[in-house]
Image: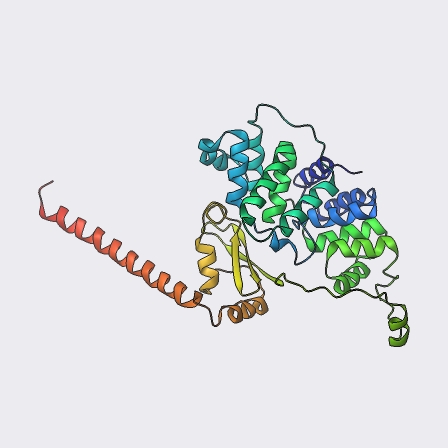
Length: 346
């Protein structure tokens, strides 16, 4: 049974190299050592996916919530700004914070156990759901070493920053399976989820060449097992991802999820993690020229469709007007100050 600490150590090693080939080989060799179930989970975890494609949005925990729990465990809420300023990213800040605990837990978590906890978080709904989610997350972080907590946090906010992305993971899966990367990419087009790609290849469900054989309709009807229909109460989750430019050229990921009729928006910048709003979210919603680094006009069009019929466009426009009025008022204030200084003796 693979430990989560091993996975965290591999992720840590990836940040030490910029070679795509080395990253793909390291990850491919690692997941090749795991059994099918663990490899399926690891492929998702290592690109910042807590659960299968489309399911992780249901976890719905912000970086601020994660930080607050870690600070409570470490007794270091007052040192938050200092630690975050010294850390390279949010995950490292969590690691630094939890190293302040009086005792470091033993690395006992397995990859499967962490996946189970994530699934439990996603399944929590109904009355007092948020409090129950926070309690479950607290239990998980309390069991985690500082390094494990670093990557638990990174996975939950989808900010890995170790060079591994979805495309490179497909190359790693090709290394694992000793198959051409183009073939793995074709399988991914069919499956739509990295974990399912791993399972399909490892179990032989994906034939060589990435083409899935389809039985004749009569045969499919005869062999398909009967499944009782269940009423589905959970709203479908759709997610759009955008890369936005920071003021100093840095890049941040903004994610917009639609859960039924509700929208959820998150950003990986410091303000987005610790507060409810940041300028990158506003610039995305306002479709500010030049603010978006990602080239995904189809997703922008989809976002505009989601906003139709909601109060968000009017609220964003009102906020933009208010900020422009504030900027003008501040400029006028500075001008009046200079005017007064010019009228008095220095």
